[in-house]
Picture 1 (cartoon, rainbow, N blue to C red):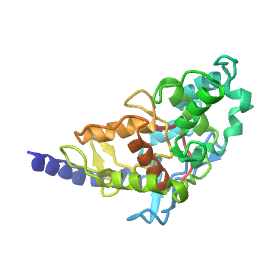
Picture 2 (cartoon, helix red, strand yellow):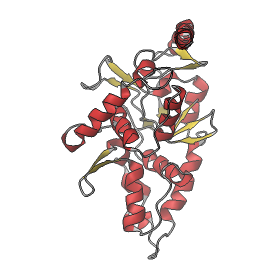
Picture 3 (cartoon, rainbow, N blue to C red):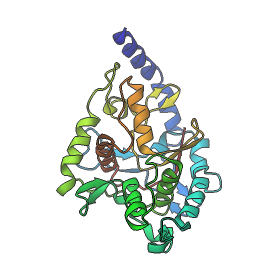
Picture 4 (cartoon, rainbow, N blue to C red):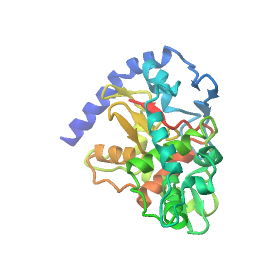
Length: 285
């Protein structure tokens, strides 16, 4: 039965190849420019540590023209409503001393460039931290408030706000030094087959990007656009939430958001997109 199912998946992707090629050929080199002024890098030479690719490409390139257009205008991008909510949280007092994010960071614009370098090593805590971990460090250690839910609405919105002020900047995530063991773990997980379907991340996003699956195009699985507003979810989705969905689709027990496994995968995937622009909040199907 498993072999039959895998065969059906393979046939579906092959049969959809011509449709995928036709869609991408409609405009072989579309330009992503947000609000007519923020130019995005959607194609870049593959980093040396990325095997089997000569070029890395944004997931935006694999979307329909209608979906692409939503991301090109902040008034049309539904994810920007979440950014507005995060601005309110950015300025809201919390904790016993009534501090807020703006107490230390005058405005969100001060955080420009942060998203482009995360996950990264935190010397004080001797660990690789994601943006969400850094936010909770500020919330609990600086503001002395209760931690936010790692995948809760406030956290996803704040991650989108932090990403939004870095849009257009190239991703530049370090993979050497103290982060190297975590990066290697992420690479191992990326190529590990999971679940009853025995599929790895690479089976879809490296072996079959550009093909069709479930009436949609497979991208390279780049995460430079997260958090992403997914039309099928009608909401903003964090990258760890998307990881959960991918692992679940292999019919495997998934890891938890914020787990060491997902932090490692995030670091590895972020580094695969080095050179592409920060796009979050992006719009995807």
